[in-house]
Amino acid sequence: TDKTSDIAILRTLGMGPNGVVRVFFIQGAMIGWLGVLAGVVVGVLLALNVPVLVPALEAFFGFQIMPGDVYYVTRIPSELESRDVVVIACAAFVLTSLATLYPARRAALVDPASALRYE
Image 1 (cartoon, rainbow, N blue to C red):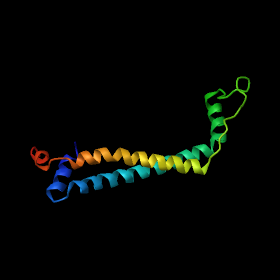
Image 2 (cartoon, rainbow, N blue to C red):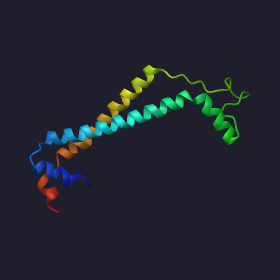
Image 3 (cartoon, rainbow, N blue to C red):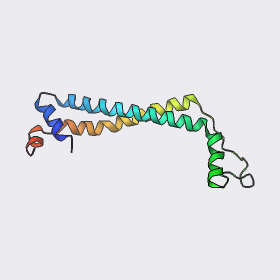
Image 4 (spheres, rainbow, N blue to C red):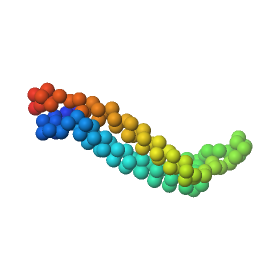
């Protein structure tokens, strides 16, 4: 796609297929870490502020999310477990890393001559 000519240039300059895989994997892993970090920060902030956010949303929209006459509980219980946050963050990073492998491998298979033919 749009990186095909860049990959072809790297390959013609002597970078092997494993080097291309490494470049794409490292770039994908870095982007994955940034996404996981941002998600953890936003998720933790939201989870810690559920007791404040829910009443504010109820007042803004004008209805109760969990009315006492319908449910046994009248508030949304929220407990933040640090172990859960770590496990979820690790799982998210593993999944982003695995999702990076396929495009990295495809990038390594680009034929430099055919990629640069129409440039």
